[in-house]
Amino acid sequence: MGAKFGLKDTFANYKLTQVFMNVEKILIELEKKHPGEVEYIQAVKEVLESIEEVYNQNPHFESAGIIERLVEPDRILTFKVPWVDDHGQVHVNLGYRVQYNNAIGPYKGGLRFHPSVNLSILKFLGFEQIFKNALTTLPMGGAKGGSDFNAKGRSDGEIMRFCHSFMLELWKMIGPETDVPAGDIGVGAREIGYLYGMYRKLAGENTGVLTGKGRAWGGSLVRPEATGFGNVYFANEMLKTKGETLEGKRVCISGFGNVAWGAATKASQLGAKVVTISGPDGYVYDPDGISGEKVDYMLELRASNNDVVEPYAAKFGATFHAGKRPWEVPCDIALPCATQNELNKQDAETLVKNGCWCVCEAANMPSTPEAIAVFQDAKILFAPGKAANAGGVATSGLEMTQNSMKISWTREEVDAKLHQIMINIHEQCQLHGKRPDGYVDYVKGANISGFLKVASAMLDQGVV
Ligand code: NDP
Ligand code: 2IT
Image (cartoon, rainbow, N blue to C red):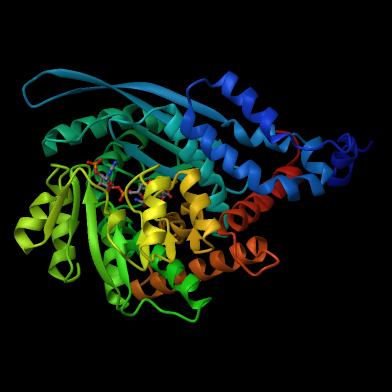
């Protein structure tokens, strides 16, 4: 054997006996190893079931242990985050960064600050991020992080002190070429600013270590809107397959955060009528449509740290439905924009019964597996978050490119690139998701496309 260990030699060392993936066995073992991590197991199960067939067609995958290496993160950092409130009281939260897989690029993925955050949720999000990032066609690996910090009722000073303390630990394992965090639930422009400020001070550098930055210090135009815009661009591609457009369609949106805001803005720009938004307190039904100043008001509501949508109803004369979800409102299109497992089997049945024919996920894993089965059995258009919300991280990738090149693109340039990326992702889903009867299984299509890219990179690079 020569000094160089070439690709062919590497493959020659894999044992090529035909062993098939046993999804059930893998899941039982994972559940034993990680008891109680339900969201993580849910996300893994969906991907494994989708890719089983293509996986078994290539014996190299099993010989190289691709599944075992994909389902476990490369590493997990957990740390405590002590901070002082406005009254001098000390609080301690838990902080995490889950670096999942960097076969195709630096670890990349958001930070979530929400009291519900735990390792299961961050592992599901990090795992999903691997395939989502691969779908964007940009060189980004998968990661996620966050904290169980609850911003509700907290002052700006408290949020700043929390973010600074969080970064005092996180900065050791991130960098513009190694791991680039961004926002997610509870982490928007304000939090990214405080996090960046502390990183800059500690590392003594101004680099693209975070995305979602302010425009004046390296941020990209369109990043705040990107997830919602990209989601609606994706929905538009789905509608085109039926010869339809968004013009005149009724749209139900859940959530009232960053993603819901972007989706409401673009959907109404393209002629749709957005009739609902929601929060943990219930949903608002506005039959006149949520557009213009009403969409701007969503930003005010979110920035108030009060976590309620009810004030919208009083301000604009809409109706508020306490403790309910928006899926009972008849619509053509549903865009879940709040959080995981927010749309269950019963909600799905109600949507279909009321005539909904397109569900395009903007949140991560908002539909339960049973709800997805209802949509697919009814043969309505259904797109999973990892394809349909990839516009956010794709625009983060565009921000990284601009930072590396020390340039900034115009709004039109970024928006055009985002739009094209969403069209490409839609094509990838069709390529691998089209069934013989013509129905497109976007879940399968997205999982197979993302998986093949990452798995082939892992094969090329050997066992590391
Ligand atoms: P925000 O923090 O801006 O908004 C999240 C919204 O959802 C809040 O209004 C939140 O309220 C609400 N919410 C949380 N739980 C529930 C619930 N059970 N019922 C109703 N509303 C709820 O986060 P984003 O808009 O950034 O994120 C929304 C979703 O989009 C998440 O799934 C996220 O992972 C996903 N996503 C985000 C991207 C981004 O770039 N920001 C990119 C891709 C996906 P509260 O805080 O009170 O719970
Ligand atoms: O879930 C997601 O894709 C995000 N929260 C955005 C991640 C990013 O790095 O922009």
